[in-house]
Length: 115
Picture 1 (cartoon, rainbow, N blue to C red):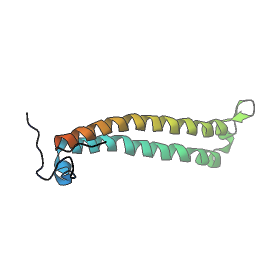
Picture 2 (cartoon, rainbow, N blue to C red):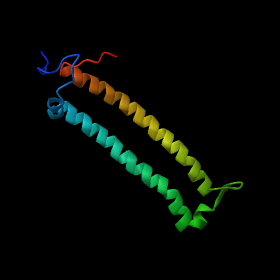
Picture 3 (cartoon, rainbow, N blue to C red):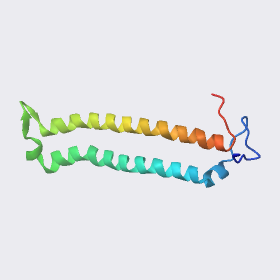
Picture 4 (tube, one colour):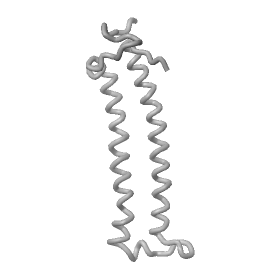
């Protein structure tokens, strides 16, 4: 099966971005990105602001000792580092898949990268 190739798209010129934007594979790629980026961003913002809100509005709860002098506020603050690392790892894995989809989509339109 032959793949559609834009008349202005070669390995040395830029792809036909308007044709790519209309392609269902491109639209699916954008949807997949949105399905991760938007919820991850909302989760990050809520999680990040939960600490100052918790300390401000629920100080007695956040002061509860968990282990020695370590209280819930300290553990929550520490957990934010791990949460950011986990989100970054999830994003890197997803972005690798998006990159593969992008290369496939560009190849579909006759554009190949030289690097």
